[in-house]
Length: 207
Image 1 (cartoon, rainbow, N blue to C red):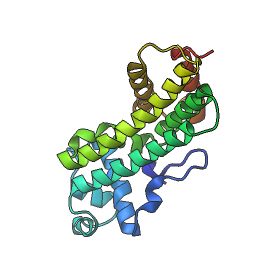
Image 2 (image 1 turned 90 degrees about the horizontal axis):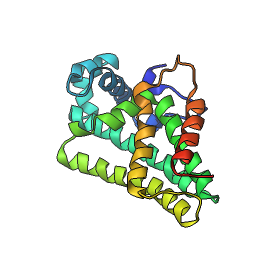
Image 3 (image 1 turned 135 degrees about the horizontal axis):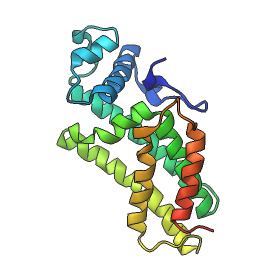
Image 4 (image 1 turned 30 degrees about the vertical axis):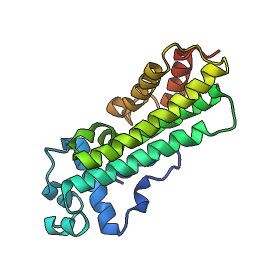
């Protein structure tokens, strides 16, 4: 199983929505190549080779290397937004919703670290139109976490002076897990998720 296809906790990687099989193989190969070498240092020949296909075969499914990155970014951000939106809409206290959002978001960035590194750190390689689309999704991600914190402040559960700045800090903390998490390290994605949920609750002054 390739690093871009890893699963954690029984969750399915989002690539099953990509069809046909050849297009999916190319996308997974691109994730691995971009994560290992960076977008600009990766060639379409590198991607095709990893997928066991010819360079010409790649263009049947993707017109450009940027189209591949855009597809990866879109799928990854949609998944990230779904994770946070699910937690934000739970029928529970703001404290419980924030803990759930953080632990789930961290688990994804740890368990899908190869994909997450590409999704979160190759944004500037996209052209203006594609970048604007992804930035809009990032604003929605921010809004979900900010909404939970605002609810907690309004309910007296959290003691936060700067909601906007705290939201940025929470998201940055979660996202950075993709940079350092090691599958052979001392903690599992679930354990890191639980640790970060506790840290964030302390950050917002939750009892």
